Image (cartoon, rainbow, N blue to C red; front, side, top):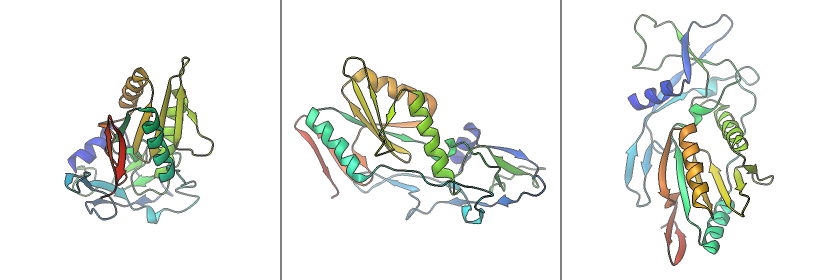
Length: 238
C-alpha cells in the first residue's frame, strides 16, 4: 500500500483540494484479490513472484458524458504477438520485454474527476478535502484510453510509425536498414529488431519517460512461456 501511494505521488497523479460546487466524488478502495486483478504476480512456473496492492477508483459510479467519454483502448492480438515471435525466430533476433509500473497512472485526464481520500491515508486536519485527479487511476472508465493515448503520443514523438491495421504495433526504421518493432499489451510490451544500439536507446528512453521494470529477454508473456536459445525459439503454455 505504501508503494502504491508513493508511486501515485511520484507521478503527480492528484492534488488535494476542496470539492467544487456541483461536482461529486468517486470512492476508492484497496484491492488485493488475485483472481481477476492480477495483484499476485506469478512467474512462468506458476510460483508467486510478488504481491501487490492496487488503489482502485469505483468507476461504476461514473456518469457517461460527465465523468468520461471515450473508453476504448486497443491491445495487441495474440496472433500479432505470435507473428512478432516468428519474425524473431526467422531472423535470429533477440526479443526483450519491459513492464510499466502502475501504467494507468500515466494517462492524462481531460475531465474533472474527484476521488475520496483512500482509507488509511486520510490527511489529518484535512479530512473533508478530496483529491482532484490529474491523471487516471485504475478503475476509472477512461483509464485504459488515457494510458494508450499517452503511449501513442510517446511513440509518435520518438519517430515510430503506428501500424494502420494493428494500433498497438509500432515500428522504427534506421537509415541503413535497422528496424525496431514494439508490440504493446496494456502495460506489458515486447520489442525486437536487428540493431543493438536501437535497443539500448529505446530502453533508455522508456525508462526516462516511465517507471519501468526491465525483464530482459522475453520469457513469460500473457501466460505464454518463451524459451530463446541459439537453436531457435519455442513457446508453450504447460
